[in-house]
Image (cartoon, rainbow, N blue to C red; front, side):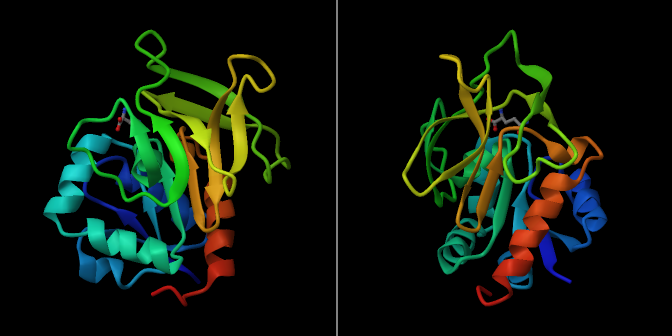
Length: 204
Ligand code: GLN
């Protein structure tokens, strides 16, 4: 059974721990480098990415996270976690750092004030069975552009001029603008647990 951490500096940690357990992983909170060393993979939750960035630097886990990503550790980021996985961000704070790893540009708070929060069905490539994933978007980012090695798994308003990418994968890194951990539908977490099983523990 894969051991999957949830970065527990800030954000909706508890919901991810529950979703991972229901997707048959052993889930535990991770705050310190020693705890990171003991997991096969990690989830970076939703929350506030500027605060999370500051706390990651303060707790000394930013560099260890970058090293594990470089070694191939699977990571799943939701919302603020998606921002943390982006190589480049727009509308971030000047001193805001990311872990990086996904060759994408992510715009923070992209859906704007009036639409700060909304819910919408999302067609998710690889999870066709069971229909659309229920997308909960809370001051969500979108993916502005992706590099050649990034697979787009979901977009809103696909095929229109107003299309926006909201789920991507690059190798062992997965990111969504929305929060499957808040819905009780754990297919996206199960998809991630499968990625972790396939990756094994070699990256530790
Ligand atoms: N707007 C937040 C940020 O910039 C993300 C919101 C969320 O994680 N629900 O970090």
